Length: 175
Image (cartoon, rainbow, N blue to C red; front, side):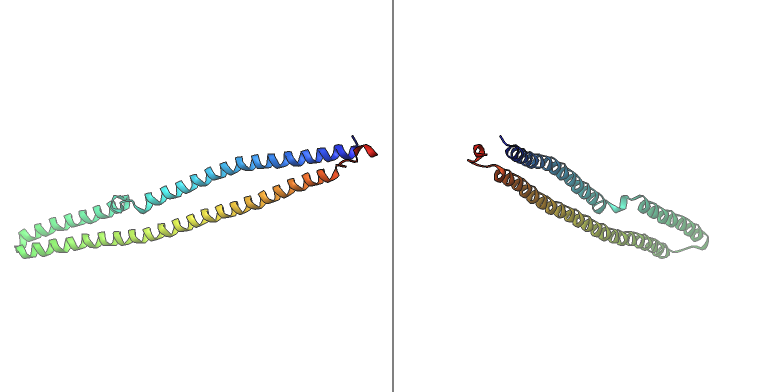
């Protein structure tokens, strides 16, 4: 066997080995990448459901605001009752005072609900940006995988072709 034939054989074997190893490695990394992407999507969806569909009335700040209004209304009612005993307030006046307190509480709840709507719009916009980013990353990764696969196939084919061209088919013994 001539040195040219041996080198062509080695070149072909390296090309085949490189192609197969590249395919196996890329499959392993692709699986890891898919798992990571799936995990990121799940985390994003969990975050979205928790923040978007959460009960805004159970929020600590909301509960504190409602409690402050309730305490304030309770103090005012106690003061007005005491004043009413001294001054002789009518029942209509007490009803009007209670209606005013309920309107105050209604205003607080309405403001909290309005703030919650704004928060939901912000969460929704952030969720859309995050999903878009994940989709762009996935697209870029798939595009890179496609280019790398084409490159690996082309390189492996070229090495194999060069190895076959280097073999002197039928002329090995004529030298």
